[in-house]
Amino acid sequence: MPAQGLAARLEAKGILVGNRSTKRTVNRWVVLAVAAVAGALDGAPYMWSIFQNPLMELHGWTSGDVTFAYSLFYAFVLVGAFVGGPLQKVLKPKYVLLIAGLFLGGGFLLTGFADSVPLLYLFYSVIGGLGDGFIYSAAISAATKWFPDKKGLANGICVGCIGLAPLLFAPMGNALIDAFGVQGAFKANGILMIGIFLVISWFLEAPEKGWVPAGWTPPIADGGASKVANVVGKDLTVRQMVKQPAYWAMLVMVACACTSGMMMTSQASTIAQVIANVTAAQAALQVGLLAVCSFVGRLLLGWLSDRIGRFNAFLIVFAVTAIDMLFLFGLAHDFTTFLFAMGLAGFGFGGAMAIMPPLVSDSFGASNFSVNYPFVYMGYTFASFIGPMLAAGVYQASGTYDQAFFTAGVIAIAGFALPLLTKRLCLDMHRKAAR
Image (cartoon, rainbow, N blue to C red):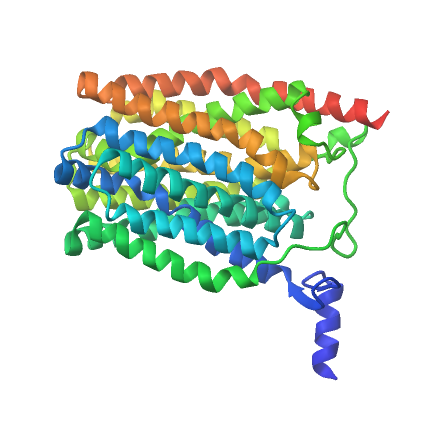
């Protein structure tokens, strides 16, 4: 039969994969597409800056109140990631993703009813953050396992869609705020998210343990393999991983790399209005541009990390971030210049987010990725407090963001040595494990 012949050819190329446990044939690119859509919804909270001023005007809350909701959200993303990893050993990824969607969408929906700061934190930060963390564990983990031969590209697509999400959600959210008010916008977003997750969750599958694409052999971390772009070492448990100096260096590296990006995503609309004197509509455009450049950074640097190595790609992230924070934002007092500086910030931040998942998988093994990853993701959580609260605190005290940009630039310069240190520690760890 022609159809059977086509299926055989696709299976030989590793596109269609038979799964004995479910007795289904899975197209790994469909799974990647589902993970990408889930990633886009996972990135919806990056549009937070468009809600800040309307929330303050409606309820009389301070900038610190609403900024802390964003930072607290990402603290519970980490909690969700911690819970979601082990949960996948009990439930199939599709069910974890469904639970995630109900939490994230439900958190947005309930935030539309929040009339006090504690309720804002409970609905948006706690419930929504937990759901967001589940998504990351379920979707990114599944995509990584289906593409051991193209980890950087697969993760670049998934986390690229996370970064691209504000391009859709920011203008849509702005229009919903204009039409229905900020509370109505939260409710509409929540209902939309729940509906989408009810559909896409059923298409998320994980490969059988030990599966690799036809004709592909994993690189091995020995003395000779250290010369290639990426090496794959022994699978480590969490207990084994946290005993490695490489883990602690990687944790600090991630925190330094993400601080500037989290500062910009949390305050993008407000920063644009203060520095470049733009309107609310133009500020929403800036948020969209940040999303586009974040997507480009995730896709390009994720792909590039497959070729030049994860740590070399991280060096590019630190260099771009330091130049942008220390020099370009000091010149960005008009709309065009600010667009360029904002875009570069998104590019560097997006790149860091794309490189991080395959780096964890390469360094500590793919089998325990969903459990190990949240422990490295803690660096991102630290950045979600440092960056936004730094910007909000500096602006509240001085009425400008100059000192915040300078501090973020210094952090990037200080972090420049960390990829080199972490790479050396990872290679030493792999060599000891190979003996």
